[in-house]
Length: 171
Image (cartoon, rainbow, N blue to C red; front, side, top):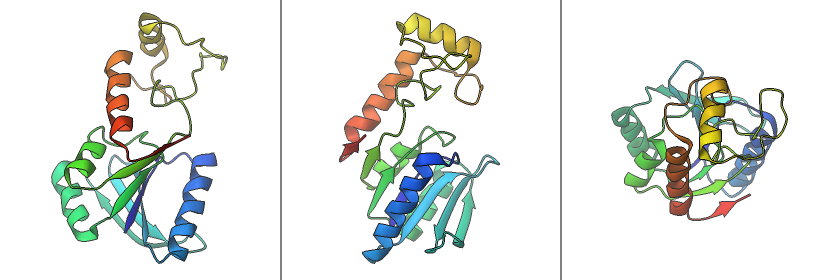
């Protein structure tokens, strides 16, 4: 079992996850997708060649249910594509369970909760100093407009640690 961790957003990230899942299946490896369900839980699912769900499980976004499913699945590795909408501790839980991971960076989410470095009007923000980022996030919130409960420095430090702990990082 190989975990593919992503968001629910579709687009290029979804296309890449599908391509990687197909390549893994050709190698005899079971890709299991992990993403937010849209209802606050984690959705774990296996899909077939035409992307129909063949197996699915929801778990609360809490340590014990995640650990239980990790023990059941025994993944050998994970590939992180996105963590938007996922519990902030998920990568720590994977690491503490002995699951190594690679990371493909699809956008700027690791340095900005808005993901695309954009202002409210869609224009490039210019990547201001930390105070400017905090003011922007205070006004606009994250990618979905939700409040960001931490400073941009704390955000970036956390993602720096996650990326540093990855076996490989792709962009």
